[in-house]
Amino acid sequence: MKTRSRRTSALGFLAAVLTGLAGFLAFNVVDGVFGLVESILGLVVCIAITVFVVQRSPPPEEEPDA
Amino acid sequence: MHDLDPLILARLQFAFTISFHIIFPTISIGLALFLAIVEALWLKTGDLVYRQIYRFWLNIFAMSFGIGVVTGIVMSFQFGLTFAKFAQLAGPVIGPLIGYEALTAFFLEAGFLGIMLFGESRVGPKLHFFATCMVALGTTISTAWILAANSWMQTPAGVAWDHGRLIVTDWWRVIDNPSWSVRLPHMLLAAYLTAAFLVSGVSAWYLLRGRETTFARRTLSLGMAAACILIAAQVFVGDHVGTTLVKYQPAKLQAAEGWWDKTTPSPTPYLWIIVPDQAGQRNRFQMGTPYFGSIWLTRSLHGTIGGLRNTPVDQQPRMVLVFYSFKIMLALGMTMFTIAVISLWLRWHGRLYSARWFLRTLVVMTPSGVVATLGGWYMAEIGRQPFVITGMMRTADAVSPVPAATLLSTLIAFVCVYAVFFGAFLIFTLRLIRRGPVGLPPHALPSGSLKRDLRPEIAGVQPYLSGTE
Image (cartoon, rainbow over all chains, first blue to last red; front, side, top):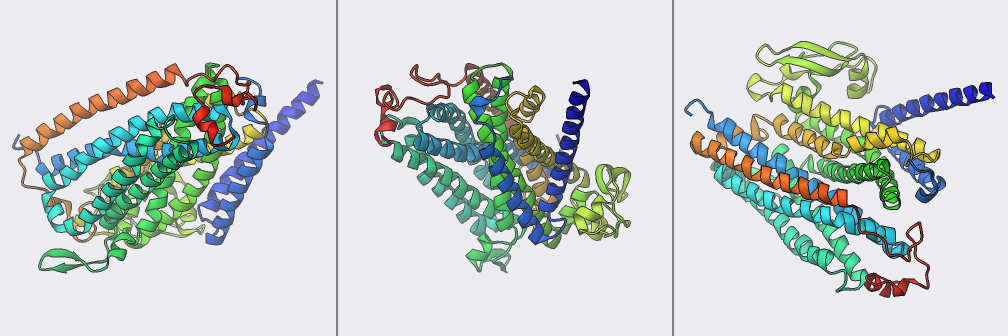
């Protein structure tokens, strides 16, 4: 059980680091580091991901309290 | 009193009044769009929580709108009283642009604001929504005119000299000057981001205290979803503002990046902290991230840029002010981007409304939009110095022949009066936030929705429902 929770938290940490790196990459792509076309595509992808996450995540009323 | 420089005092006075003023339009432009979206959602869904959100933020919008109008009028007078020579020279260009802004403000914003504030029970829901949209449109058009005037001062076009006076040769080029098309969306996005973080921060405060949870969750959801899209768009547009600076106002960008060298080392670090020595044309101390100057500014690993020594000394802005204004804006923008990414992560895992560390961060970030906007404007205005109209008129030549004592006394008066304004705004806003939104009718479900057959019986919502049922 303990091994499982450790593995879960390690995977969670890894996922958080990967999300951070993805965010850093997204910033640079949208900022135009890789070119104008890439920055426009990056912007579209950022908007699409936001819409996807907002639509697929549980509605505000169904989440647990703070 | 003889030691005081009238130029510095005139600039200080204008800097103070415009810094104070810009806070309120920024909030009201952003909140106007937020209110239009919330009212659209209310009309579409009939969910009373949206009406609750609308009513709560309408009060704060009205206060910021009112102070924004009053403090804006003061600035028009300052053009004539403190910078009369500027008004004399640039009046034929700036005057009509500000006049159109005033017309837009009076006809669209002020007219429909009455319906928005007091018409809920007097007009139908669709007309009320139309009024909200017109106010939002009015704030946007007002911004467009003001940005046209300011951008013309940054990158003048469409004018010619005629016996020492400026005459307009092409009105379209005056309005659509080289920086307007990028600075307008930059400012609008800044205002929308300000509102997004303002509503999210207040909602996070409620959630941390376990108050108004339905209202706060819905508002936070809207605010952070908007912030995710807006900050990505802002990063995109911000890069284009930088590209425009490279071409038309290189000195401003050189100062903002903190480099003096004619050519920077290869690879160029990205500077975050500097102690500049303007007289010595060097940095006493500097600290940055290796390679990122080349990557962010030249899109290559080893590219170099030109520093402020490429601009003649008598045409250089004060580096320390421009640099730190820009870095504050940039750092806050990057923080917003990080928060947006984290919010998506938390939302995906169902913890957006329960991760207390994140909610606390949002509370701290509540005024971040205003601070970032001020940073951006300081960079824009101080970076244009020593010119009031880039390449055409120096600020020193624009000041009215007013004694230093007069400027100092009016500056003190402005500080006192505006402190009262700001204090009143803060007290009333905090009181509104502490009091919380007006409660939902007793027939509301936990989510705020009403059973369809009960809706027409709810007093107070009848005017809204009559057009939607």
